[in-house]
Length: 57
Image 1 (cartoon, helix red, strand yellow):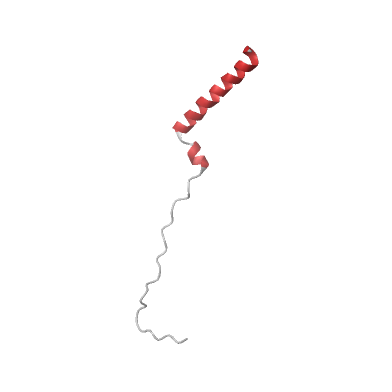
Image 2 (image 1 turned 180 degrees about the vertical axis):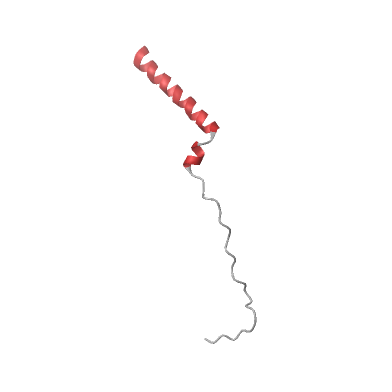
């Protein structure tokens, strides 16, 4: 089909979107201090329960 429009196109060319930050994954979540403190407390409780079961009972 022949191009019949004259002058500037009515729809401007799309502007490329700015580069977004990479999505944050599991390693980012594990680097948060409150989560690591919570996991450490749970781990210590499990360790104490295991030691109690193995050696005290």
